Length: 247
Image (cartoon, rainbow, N blue to C red; front, side, top):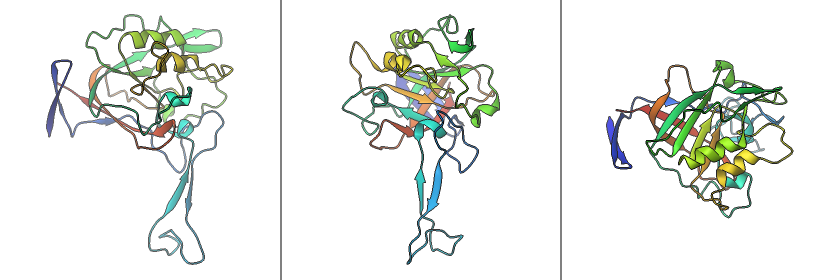
């Protein structure tokens, strides 16, 4: 089924059946992990009168899931993650469809760190006035889907880069990193704050999505983006990220 929509007075067309899912699933094992947080747990309900497991003889499956959205898979977060705002992920404003730009960047080595600095995004522009950017870091090994990032000082963004991307007009940033900030930065979270604060205020139409995976089969370029998030009263939620080639 072909769909077309208009953004900034330009019409884009795409096949709704031709998409790539960039999100990492929340699995019962082999999840990514960060910040030394426990992996997800899945527990079937059990009482004297009822067991919520077909395998154990129950009439239905009824599982309780316990997990940290920031640690175990693809998640989308709002300003509440780092700032005392009066909204949460139930209120965040994300277009159902929007155009995005996928870009691959080579992190710069600075001492023992590898970071996305101004040199890494040299030449990047947003002449199309898109509001979403999807950042793939190089190298792009499939091990990103199961990586244990805890204590490994993964790649991060220099805070000034987020300010520049904001000035370009982007409102939604998606990345394959566990965080846009350095793993241990003494709680400054400067990159997050640079992204979420606009002239000293934190609007409810900006998001950060972390721990996606962009396969090699997707070339850099422009795509239709669909960010799917549940309405939960918290700062970050598991999300599903779909991109569609457009014509």
